Length: 142
Image (cartoon, rainbow, N blue to C red):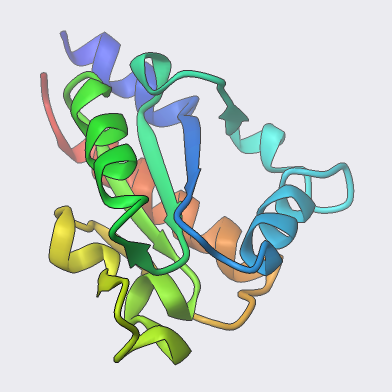
């Protein structure tokens, strides 16, 4: 089992959920995965299903419509799993605090392991956050 947890930490698979954001964070996440910053050299790969993911990257404020989608994606992920809140809206709610559909930041809904602030966050900060998330995966022995 040590081999499995170490291999998951060395090659984390990422599933992203855009919870009603402006797409600024999504564009920067994709920039971090582009050849210029090359997150794939760290083993980071985007996957299309939460059932295959090790890291859940949630961006944007949690609204009443996106709350069930975010929770369902989190529950579908296998253990061990790490959650990353990406961007100011996911970390604190940003400009959406006080809105009638705002349910809260991601940390109010899910257990968040790594916070990456910024509006939008820089690709370098995203890479550092993903590396911290991978370290947390390695620390979990399954």
